[in-house]
Image 1 (cartoon, rainbow, N blue to C red):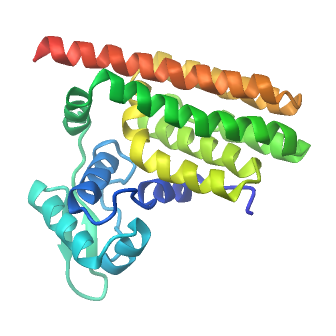
Image 2: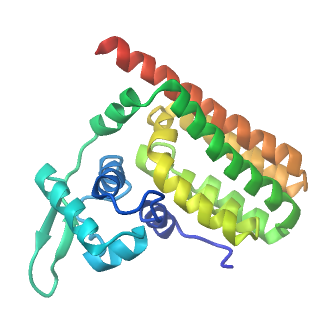
Length: 249
């Protein structure tokens, strides 16, 4: 299993990870809308072909086509003809209203369940990584954290995904890596909404470095606990955001 996963490939892998409830164009549309609105897919970025997108999501080609039609109607994607044609991201916005709408529509119980499920995956990866990572792995992981630009929300989101995928890779469990990819694609746009706040981005980096130190000290229990607490903090932020959104209508 490759040890290193670059920032761009890690983000795209999470965006285009297979859907659980395959066959629904609405799910493909939602996944891509979240990725575009949050800047995970940048303006001008080329999307996979309908056939390739269908394969990656695990859906029928007609389902991918329907989702792209919906994205074009929203003005998020444009399709160009010719040799250099394809579907390209066109929207560049800073206010993720569609994600806020998702926060409103999900119950508090659903948000907490989302956090509990993701925490189980991420904390298990951290625990196994502590037992299996080499010294070189630890230094590489530390460099990933220190390279994250905390001034940029988009860079912080990419860094979060890269860090989580790197930890999953260090667990040496192909199943955990696949599940991390799938769950990131499903939950990450909501789970890491807290990275809007610069203060939280700094706390997130501190938590990452604490996990790296625990892995370096072969302390799987501490790596697991820090990861769990980090995810729990993100969920509490999300619940507070839901309260604000509900109060403002």
